[in-house]
Length: 113
Length: 113
Image (cartoon, rainbow over all chains, first blue to last red):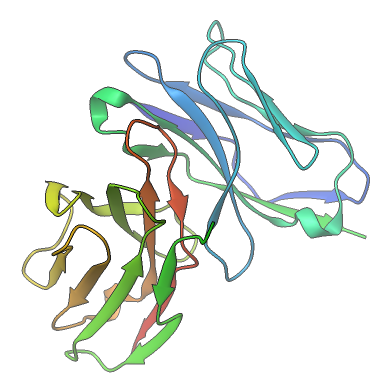
């Protein structure tokens, strides 16, 4: 079946550190891949997406590249800020599944000043 | 463009009481989703509407939960009677026709005492 696996948290980093949150997927067909972010007490915000192999999604300094050969969509940021502290969810969707989102478990990111 | 609107933002009720949540999707979005997010977990899909029809309600506990989208625009999710385990954030999302991206509202945080 279709699934998303992301690294467990919490991930704790110092401000200005380099961030990587790993995400791998299993899917039949050609999924679109997403990163959503959830700040404390808020709903889910779309951070970035990629719809086909080798696409790179980017937003607010975050990037992720759709790697079909490794079935991965790792989230990276070169220099994190305290304001990036949140929970990050990797997800996929498929047209054949009514575009329902298949979610990873979420990774809590804590940035210390 | 206005985002997905939800109300109320917070609700506290006693067990066995009833509660209703309202969602107004982004204008023109044909597909609407309701999710339940328990603290520390990813979202769980409860029901998906396409216009005013139900596409998938396989994970909706129909003995106590109901949802409607009568005119194909806004939607209401009801719980009657509530149980302690219903304490969660209820998220609404919408998606434009022919695209793969869901946009989320701020959520309603329900506490059942």
